[in-house]
Image (cartoon, rainbow, N blue to C red; front, side, top):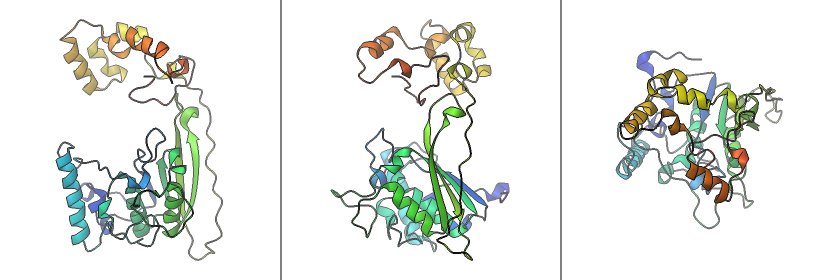
Length: 304
C-alpha cells in the first residue's frame, strides 16, 4: 500500500479528482451513502441527486453551496482531460455517458467503480445497508439517471455488481450483523472484490468465505454509563468518561440557564416515557437499553 507524503494528500470532491492522481494501492476500502437505499426511507436509489455540499469548500451546506458543488462538478466534466463524470465505463448499465444531471449521492458508487478501473487494486472492501438488495434500480414512472438494455426489473445491487464485475473483479457479498462484536444489532452489507487473473478463465470464480464472527457477548452495560456514574459525575469529568468535548460545551451552556443535574441530560423525561408507553405505535420495551440485552441499532433518536 502506498504511503503518502504530507504534500501528496488527496482531498476534495471525488467527482472532480482525476483518477490519474490516485496512486497505486493494493486494497481499496470505501463506503458510499446509504440513504438512497435504506429501508427506513423512500429508497430513491440511483435517482437520489442530493449532494453533501460545503465539505472541502469551507462553507455551510446551503442551497447556494449545493449549486456551487454541482457547478464545479460540471466544470470538471467539461474541462478535465480525464473526465471524471463521463466515466470510462460508459457502457455499464449503471453509468451515464454524461452524468452531470445526477452527480448526487445515489450515483456516488460510480466513483468507486471509476477508481477501481483505473488503479486496479488487488482487492476492495465496500459497505452499505442491506436495503441495497431490494432497492429498484430503475423507475418505470420516471426517467432513469442510468440506462439499461434489459426489460427485466433489477435491483440497485444487481446493477452495482455488474459494474464491479465489468471493471475486472470477482464480487462477493454478505449481510452481517455486528451484534457478535459489539453491543448493538447493526446489520450491514459487506462487498468484497478480488481482481480477476487475466491469464485464467474469467468464468472460473475463486472461492471466498467471509470470516467467522464470534460472539463476544457484549451487552448494553458494557458501553453505557450507569445512572450512578452520571449522577456522581460533574460536567468537567465527563471528558474522561468518553463524552465529546463538543457535547460538553453545549451542556455547560445549558447548565447556566437551569439547575438540572448533569445526569438529567442523558435520561428520557417522564413525558417521553409516557409517549413511548401509551402513544407510540411501533415502540416496544425491547427498544430501551436493558443492561443484559443487546441494543437495537443505535442512532441519534434511539427508542424515540
